[in-house]
Image 1 (tube, helix red, strand yellow):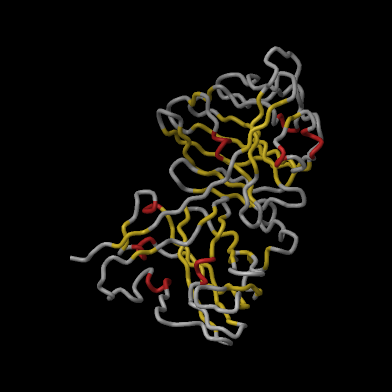
Image 2 (image 1 turned 30 degrees about the horizontal axis):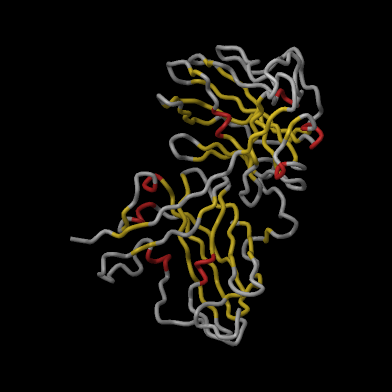
Length: 371
């Protein structure tokens, strides 16, 4: 009987930030019940915000509360860029000051038979940059519960709460406030489905910006350094070239034990070529420095694949073809080798950025578009 192999897991999601309004009611209870939009339609938009083109195709999704999972269709209906001045009445944490607010309005329809109580599927939305960096989601609350006037008047009523309930068949529209570092353009809107999948919508052409030139085009060769236990003269200069980023099949993992979550994910194979530009030999372990970030905002490290079969008969089969194990070898000066890493992503998600972290003095992180 074949001995199963074990597979290490992954982790990585965005971090949400909280803010407190300086004064006023904040509108946290302004939404009515029963499928409303969660906004005061009589006031309209009080500040100008620049609308960006965004895909708005409605897609099937799920949202869960503490008791059940509900079926929805949802999509972004508007994405607009504001200015830092929009948040002058909001107390921001230090690391959020100076960031640019984006107002993401999402529309969702309850396609199930039961009403949604205190729904907040908008909390599963974010915007991501070209390198997969997720925006910082901001929740406003009122620090002065006795105030009667509004504490702020953000574009698209983004300081208002969503509806208290949404009846079966009803539609709600709610705004989500997301902060993005100054000088960057979003590339995608992402929804983390409760079933574990990811839904993506392009912003504009979906390319975003190149992070000040630090996000290299796919396939671009770049310089770094690497050292390991065998190097005697410090870091060795190397040249790194991404060769491919491709999706595999879950069947490739047939010889490995998977968790229930991993059984619903997709393996992606990231292949990089390394050239030794120095004078010392290197162990072929450069793939330890590879990681990727997804369009859904996830940081995904390579899988640690542990072969416990002890059969040595699986070389070239399934995922072993990507592993490219080359024991008892060295990367000689002026020579090159190609290594592959495996990363698991939720269905619907895709790689946005591939990175390589060098080792030793002068080492730097290289980043490329995934494709």
